[in-house]
Length: 457
Image (cartoon, rainbow, N blue to C red; front, side, top):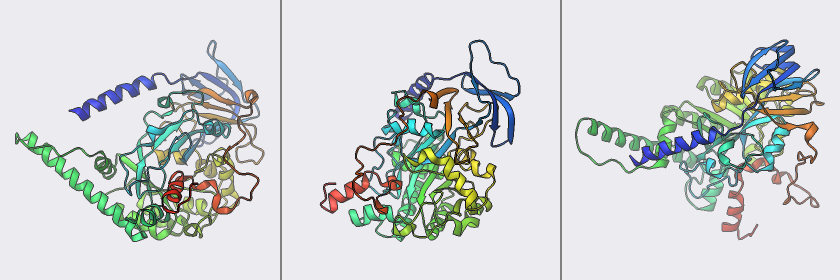
């Protein structure tokens, strides 16, 4: 009863918070509208009312006192979505156990993170704020909307976004737990065993609750099992209520986790980074697994030695729903450039390339019925470019979330787009192994150095 009471209170508080989310009404006139799912519409208007796209067509009229944006000569497309990010978080890794399914980055949201504004300046309206990759089974993630300017963390959550959880293969969890704590996993086969043991325990927990509920229904008095949120979360994964997003590189490990998922009846999985995904693209497609990749980033550690810039194109051509992610507070604002690389490496069409940063990541996050394309009835997340978004000359002019303008280049007087890290050392050479793409290990790497290598930083 206590559990259900907490859920009711949580639901009430959530509804109260979402009721405060600002929604806008605006008419965007005469743009070249890139719908993603319904072709390109020339000289077309997009009408957004109370945060929802109500009409797409020609010669639409703004209602009284409604804001109008003249997009003549400009390109209007859906807000960009990043399926792998760590922005807007005060902490990333709960690295103290190989399995931390009971923690949630939603408890560590930071709406004041300047990366939110900088992402908006790159046309990105939604990102998947993820737990780190220090654990085999990490914490749960949060899908956020970039409503820059709010101070309440509740107001950047995307209402209705499905639950997801971070997992990790290979070097990251074995380095932290095997080399660091001298516990499993110390090897790649240990990673598989942690998965199998954890899901087996979850099934035992599920069965214990089923027996208790059956006894209660038949009038048999018995003690309820002790509630365990970690195991319950894993039960939710098995039952399909929580989708796995798994940090991965090597093809053999990707196949391993798909086999584990088959054995436990898990079918909702998106592999992150998946640099060797091109080797197993048919197998990924057959399983129904999805892939979120870097455009052309690899070789920053040994297990990422083998990759190719053709990865996204090969995966896409094999029928794998693929997106391009940033995993970086800097790269997040260049995702339209990253998508453009798939035309140089793989010859994807404009539509195929733009899907990598719009509707495909929306599908991977389970929010494609709400965002990811410009369609009537979808949420008014829009970015307006001065040129075609795959052009190297393209610069976002305005970015709207729920019909509200959160970035306008004409009113960017303070130029907050400048990426500045006060801790970055610019006077010394920056070596490849210091890249910021490994933000999956934020916090865990410093802790490892402090605890086991005797280094203070």
